[in-house]
Structure formats: structure tokens, C-alpha cells
Figure 1 (cartoon, helix red, strand yellow):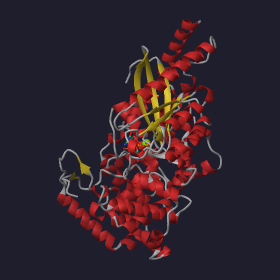
Figure 2: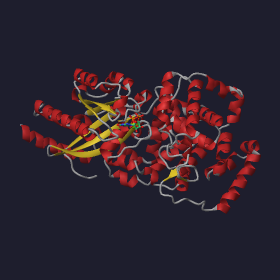
Figure 3: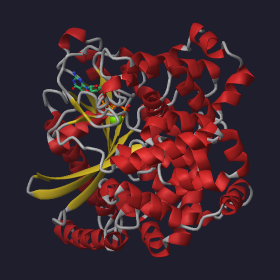
Figure 4: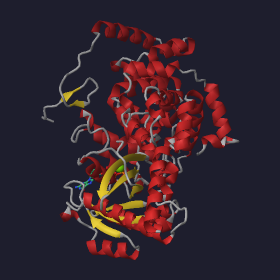
Length: 216
Length: 324
Ligand SMILES: Nc1nc2c(ncn2[C@@H]2O[C@H](COP(=O)(O)OP(=O)(O)OP(=O)(O)O)[C@@H](O)[C@H]2O)c(=O)[nH]1
Ligand SMILES: [Mg+2]
């Protein structure tokens, strides 16, 4: 729990109720699956540390409730996110039709220029019940400038890969941002600042100065 | 259902079958007799000896009488006579709106699958569907909101389907839970306002630490308050909370919230946000049921104080308790 890390990213999981957000997270963080997991009421926090290109990255993941009504209280969770997994169920076309609403909701609460969104078509183990074509989803993701993957929390297909992919994209973006804002005091993981503790703050500040010396 | 499962005394399926025997059968029986006696003259007792009832309830209602006592405390008899004998039946005959119906169906398999009653093919699931649909017809503005299922499932374990429905009506109105569930969820904001204020009062150090970390109750506690802790604590604790909730009202929600942090407080003071959120995930096993209830009622919290905070929230909010 006390391991040191180079970066701290906050990622949110959003999408309709029942598409499998909590199970994706359960698979990723504990390699488990729960056929009758409770509906998420409000939000649930998880974290995991992974290594990407020699860097240790701590990800804070906020799993949110999918039912429409909970959007009334979700702004606290979106605040400061640098990544979002936007999840639909490949067997449930309406969960795909609602993507626009989720994106709009997200963008209202985060810095749109500093967030990576990745589209996830979950439950790809249920091929015979499929109602969303991969091509349609791919087209949607390209139109909206998102990465895209189909996953299965049940049989593990692409779950680790999806999380690693989004973290990699965030990492690349933060590096790019640091380079383009050279010498400014802006932090690498700016938006997560608000929820960092003093100890984390120290690590980050240290890291920032290292980065600066690296790129200037 | 031929599956060979082991159940605890409330009907929840237990994995490692160390079946609990009731530890004090003699004492339990004596308590049941006292309660039977009290129920015999219920109306008199509620009018003349409310403190006596309150004391008894805080010690826990005997399981075999729980449903009856909850129903009496929530006064569903009165509700039934106000709405009429056939009201529930009429609701069942009315079509539920499509969105509520879909939301309800999606959550059925996800509600208490660990309880024998709600296993597929048993009586619980159809009753859960009917009661929730009936409620959404009864109260179309609210319809169905996730969280309600856990409340009604709990009632269904202890009482008839129709009584469970009336309990939900009572919870929403008499016990003011409705504002937590209606669109916009205004009650959730209001509850967190009060929680923040009370937390500052009772746990000043930890409150400051949370504030400095921007750790908000909305990051972990919506499910606590919306399901009256059913989704947080083990069944033994939850039942005791519900007993006192029906007897004394929503105040217990605040008492429990504050006490929940009592044991973890010292550790948390030196923790980061992540660490605290992880620690909160095990907070439910910090207490034995009796211990939690005793501690919760050891706090001096008056109805008046909550009323004042309600008023403060409606009129001039103290920004300290809105957001950090
Ligand atoms: N076949 C299959 N079922 C899945 C998969 N992922 C989740 N499920 C099932 O879908 C249902 C809902 O999963 P959850 O993970 O609880 O869904 P959620 O998106 O978190 O739902 P909310 O918390 O209500 O927003 C459960 O019954 C899961 O077992 C998957 O990859 N394949
Ligand atoms: Mg969930």
C-alpha cells in the first residue's frame, strides 16, 4: 500500500447500469468475477499500481452508479479525472445509444482538453446475443477521438489490456503536455492535485522537478 | 430447490457451515415473552410508555417478532386504512412505466442473492418485482431508484408482501427517505450537509483531516444512507439499526455514521485519501452488533440539533459543510 509511484492518475468508469463496470474493475484489480454483484449505489473507489515503460503508476479508479438518477451526485467523482472508461454492453443497444449523454455529462465536469476517454464494449463473451456491431462502435470511437476495445469481465478478454491502454494514453498525453508547457509551473497530473495528500504532493513535486530537468 | 445449502438464522446462505446456535436460549425465550406481553397492549404502551419501548427496541427486537413490531412502529395499519383494503391490489393491476420496469428487472438478480428467499425460483424475486412495481405506480415521480430494492427485500424477509409494500411507503414518507430517492436526490445533499456538521462537532480532528484531503462523504456514503446501512454492515448489525430506525426515526443514521469512524479514527489521522478510502472498505467489521448500537446511542444528539441543521441547510448554508 505504501509503495512509491511515479504518477497518480484518476480514472472514472461510466456507462449505463448493468453494462459490467463493477465487474471490469473487479477483474482488473482482483482477477475475480461476480455474476450477481450488487448494483453500485453512488460510487466505489479502487486502486491499483501498474508498471508502464519502467514507470510505476498508481491509478485511482472510481466506479460509478449507472442509473440515470445518480448523475445528480456524480460531479464529485468526475472532478479531477484524467481518464474515463466509457462502457456499454455489446448485447444491449440502448447502452450504446446513450453514450453521447455520458460523454456530455463527463465533459461538463472535467477539463475536456486534458482527459482521455476510451470506449469499452463489454460482455464480448456473449457473441450470440450481440446487438452492437464492432464496426459501429469503432466508427463512433473514431468520430469522438477515443480508443476502443471489446472486453469480457467474465472470461477476462482484454480487461488488463484496456486499463493498460488507457493508462498508456494518459501517460503519453501528460508527457506531451509537459513538453508543450515547458518551464511553466503546471503540474504533470494537474487535475488530480485537489485530492492528493501532502505525502503524495511531495512525491509529485519531486517528480515534477525531475521532469523539468529532464526536458529543459 | 434441492440444492444443499446451509443457512444462518436469518436465512442467509453461509459458506463455512459453522452453524450458530442461539447462545442464550433461556434468555431469548424470556425476552420473547416480555415482547409478546408488550405487543398485547401495544397502543397503550406506545401512548403511555414510549421511553420503555425505546429502551427495549435498542436492545434488539426478537427475530420472531420483528416483522410485527416493525409494522406497528411504522404504523402501517393506519396507512392501510387510509388508502383502503384494495389499494395494493389495484396498484398491481396497473402497468408500470417502461423505464422503472426495466430498471427494476435489471436489479432483481442483484438483490440479496445470498439469501435463500431470493434465490432463483423461490418466492422472494417475484414478490420483490411486484412490490417495487407497485411502488413505482403508487409514486410515479419517484418511480424506482437503485437502493430501494435492498430495503424492500429486507422487509420481505420479515413480513408479507403487502405489508412490505406498506413499510416502503412508510419509510419514504413518515421516515422522510423519499427525498433521497426522487430525481435530483436533494435529500442526499441535505443529509451530507448534516453529516459534515455533526462530524465536525463530534470528530473535529478527523473532520479537519478529511477536509484537508477533500475527502467527501459523497465518495463512499451514498449507499450507506440510501440503504440504511443494509449494504454496508453484516445482517446482525443492520437489523439492530433498522429496529431503532423504525422506533426513533432517521436520527440513528447520523449516530451510526459518526460511530462507524470511532475505531479507525487514530489510524486515519495519518492516512492519505487512498488509504482512508481503502480502510473504509473494512470499517463494517470494526464492531460487534451490540457494541455498535451501544456506542451509537452513547452520542448525545438531539432531535432539536438535527432540526436546526435542517433549517440552516434550507436558509443560510454554512459553506464549511457544503464542499471543501
Ligand atoms: N456475460 C457477461 N456478463 C457480465 C460481464 N460483465 C458483467 N456481467 C454481468 O452483468 C451484470 C451487471 O454487472 P455489473 O458489473 O454489476 O454492472 P455495472 O455496470 O457495475 O452496473 P451498475 O453498478 O448498476 O451501474 C452482472 O450480472 C454481471 O455478472 C461480462 O463480461 N460478460
Ligand atoms: Mg456497478
